[in-house]
Structure formats: structure tokens, C-alpha cells
Length: 136
Image (cartoon, rainbow, N blue to C red; front, side, top):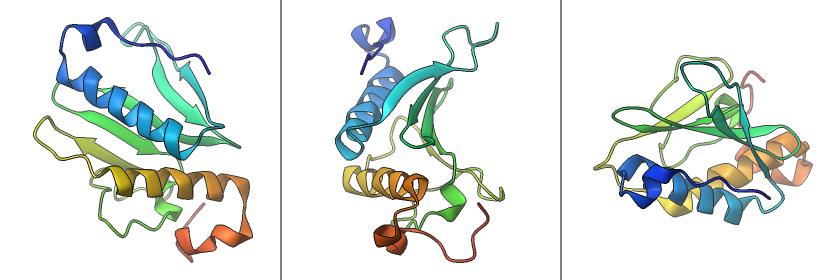
């Protein structure tokens, strides 16, 4: 897997460091996931960091005041730790907005990423991680 590190990581930008921490967790939880940059445009020339395994698991984006981790099928995932705090009204996606002072619950992130992979794979053994009756 090719990994792109931002110059801002070296300069101490907390957002790039947080995205790097999330990248490491995603790699740990989904070692077969592919990391890509998608949806490049003039306002975001480097694109959106996207992780996929049998479909998109999640995307990671840096904003001025936060790092956003958006799960493509988050509405279908069980979130027992209450990490999802953005895009809660959507029928498919869910997101986690992390501000500089927010703690990072590594175990809960690992669990969500693993559940997203299970959902993408359609693994019947992983159904405990998937919401019943959720839109897909």
C-alpha cells in the first residue's frame, strides 16, 4: 500500500498528525484496505484520502478546525461508543468530527473500521456489528 504523508505532518500541524494516527489505526484494523486519493478538484487538489476493502470503508479529510472521518455506510454500523457525531441525519453515511482537544478512542475506531469491512464483505459472521433495519 502506498502512503502519502503530508508536509504538514513534519511541521507539527495537529490535523495532519491526527489523520496520520487514524491512518495507522485503519491499517491495523483493515490490513488489506487500499488507500487512495479520490475526488481531486481545484478547492482540494490533493483529493480526499479514501480507504477501501470490498467497497469504501471511510474517508479522511482535514478542515480548518477538525479532522473528519466519514464512514460510507456508517448508518448501518453499530456505534456502541457513540463516536459518530456528524452526518447523523443521513440515511447512509456517518462521520466523526475530531477537534484538536478531542481524545482518540483507538479501540472504538478499530471496532468501527473492522465492522465497516465486515459490512462491505457481506460476512454473515459479523452481523453483530451491523444495525438491523438500517438503510444501506
